[in-house]
Length: 199
Image (tube, rainbow, N blue to C red; front, top):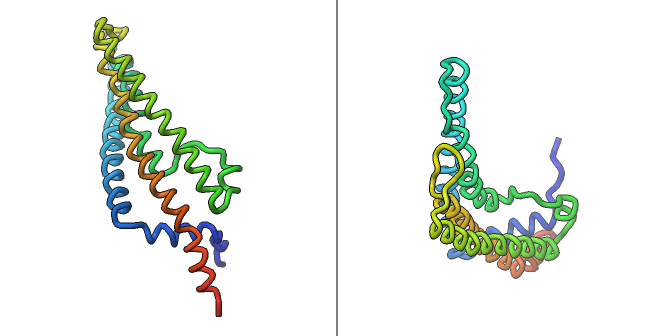
């Protein structure tokens, strides 16, 4: 039994995406490489946390020798995991959205919603960069340390915020360029589809 026919708008968008200019395809590859590298680091950190937690539980309950700093390392690494993984999630459009609205939108309205979402992400990325940088510089100036056994310099962790914002910006720029290209080419794709449907 055949599946449901694809939406006309989805087919038109796929046709427009297939005609992306070479510079946009190259930009997509470059951004994809950056986000994959960052995501790979996030995965390594998750695996490290998993091993560290398993080792900590084993040491605590079987050997009666708890690793007192393991929970602290895991908690601190969550910021790095979030900042490193968020760009890949954004690139794959895996972020949270109001599906009942975005799935009902068609044509240029759907593209306008994407542009609005990209503007919101760009604003958050800029906040992470500027506020995170200022906070980290202040923490370094007054020599703040993390609470707990490790007492790491707090600014080294706060620098993850501007790093995350800097990783988000290329993804936003790519998606804005793609959306604007689709905006301009969507009518062409509709016309080409209509011509193909004529006998």
